[in-house]
Length: 515
Image (cartoon, rainbow, N blue to C red; front, side):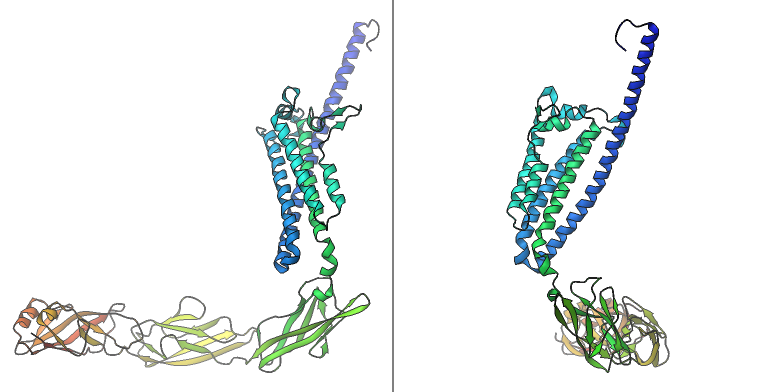
């Protein structure tokens, strides 16, 4: 097209060809860019799965360390070392990718990532390797050399794994298609579209995950054969519940300590009878529970291992308890309920998770089986508490218990906290408070004195309001002689928590004056 003298028409045709070829190249470029972007997404998703798998392996190795520390601690230390190097290098690569995408409105617009200016500016400004480029090379070398050295000290890992790490993460100069040696970093990243460089960085992260997975998997390879031996399993009897009623059938299952859903024993014998039902590696049991008391489950499991038979003994026990036919009800304070106070109660039926209880003044409070009973307005001297519930097998059980109702005992009057006949000075009595108590009563309730009568020998009786001597009572007290008796009688009081409850008559207090 360029040879000889061309007519204007031919020049136009040639120009149209060039435009057409350029358009085709442009379309192909967009397709290639999108393909790189999709590859990057797939690699990223694969890396996420690999990270989860490696984390699960580390958790499993930690469990083995707790089971057998002497055997697995050295392997765990190497695994931690390699995992730390991998995580550190992976995070570094992720930070490079994040920096390259900074300022991009849409990180998935791969067709716009056709230039490599961001990375070239970061690594190859002025045609020489920048400080960031040297740091990148140093991080690759640090990861490669650290992982390779750690692998070569572990006898469970083949040396070929370390050789593969050295090769995969080599930073030696590379020959291009024309046989010219080029710097590894320039060969892989200089002048490439941004999306291609991002995909290469993600591929490096994938290589890190793959390397970590290879090493972690190899750490336990030398011990797998002994781990899978049937001699390391233990038979465990798992009852469906901890206790059974007389007449019920025992239901439960036997599982192996190292559970395997595909495992099926050659023969199972329990309490002298062969068991044949096996579901998901579990031997299902179904036989009469037996009489009340402690019952044993004995037998054996047999497995074929090579040309020999491995026998695993079965030994466990369970309790058979009588089937309940009555409720267990207890008042938390005593065996009666009192008017005027809240009586706490615990109501239950053995073997029944929840019950229903009903009686006048009975209300549920707090946790399971906790109730409060207030019989202040109940006129009768007895009250019946009805209890019902359902057993685990679906049958119902009920019972009724009778409780006596008592009034609060007769209170005792006090002066300065002392009751009965006491000695006191005039000045002490003048300042003292008049009170009332319920000695030896199991409920912690308070009484408030609202009034009383004050009697001094040879003087009229004085009615006093409240719980202290008023001016008239104090005047009468001053006229009393030394050695004479003063009476505090007809004390009126009420419950601080139930002012409407009528207390029994309160006993008086006799005070002998000492001056």
